[in-house]
Structures are given as structure tokens and as C-alpha cells.
Length: 153
Image (cartoon, rainbow, N blue to C red; front, side, top):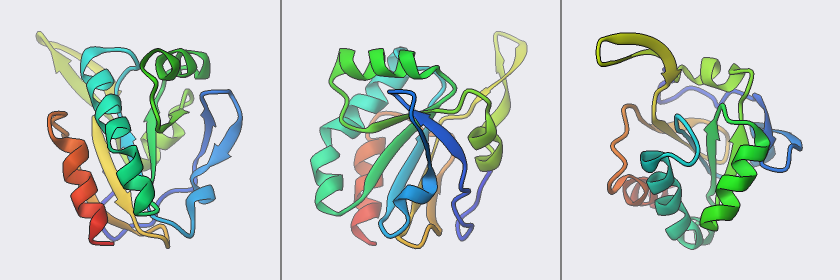
């Protein structure tokens, strides 16, 4: 997994409208990049709603928030519209961002092994340097914890 002190990888993503963008668009301001397994599932919905609830606080600090999954842009659009999400949702269908950040990992459920996205969050400063990493995120209270860390930038 990408570690504190590393530079954010400049990976190609698509937004919920299907438009191409890269994380380089955030150079010059801090950014939170959080990875979640699947849109419109209970934990992922709670996490996105929590970040949305604090979106104005992040914006007041000049911090962008980007949620990344391997969902198709159309699913992200539907997810964002359904819950009125105020964070950028990004599609990493090919998995290049997941690989670059180290969030594509082997998981286990009921003894079955499979590959999936590890719920993890990265906070980078305006230069793109990762200043904090949260591996194995527990959703409850996480967005608030990230906001507190962002206040120190």
C-alpha cells in the first residue's frame, strides 16, 4: 500500500459523467482520495454520505475529496444522484489506480479467497505528497477523523 511520504500517483480515472481526468488536476491543493469496494452497498454508502456531510468543511479548508471504486461511471452517477453526494466519485474500471495505491488486495469471506478493493484513505498535501494513510478503514467516524487531519495541513 502507498505509504506516507510517497507522491500521489497520477493515474487516469473517469468521473461519474464518464469524463477523463487524473489526480494531477488536484496539484496545488490538498486532496483526500478514498477507496471503497462497491457503490450503493451499506458501508460504502455510509462512508460517502459521511464525507458528503462534511463536504463544506473540507471545501472551507481547500481540500478536495475523491472517492474511487471500480464501478462504471453510470453506476457512480446513479449512486451520487440517489444520495445527493457532494464528493467527486471516480471510476477505476481497469484497476490502475487500485494497483498504484496498493488497494487491490486478496480478501477472504466465509473461507473463500477473492480479489477486491481494500477500504483505505490517503490524504495528500498541495504538492501531492501523501501525509497520512488510513489502511483498513472502519467507516463510523472515519470522515471526521480525516477532516481533523486535514486541518493540520
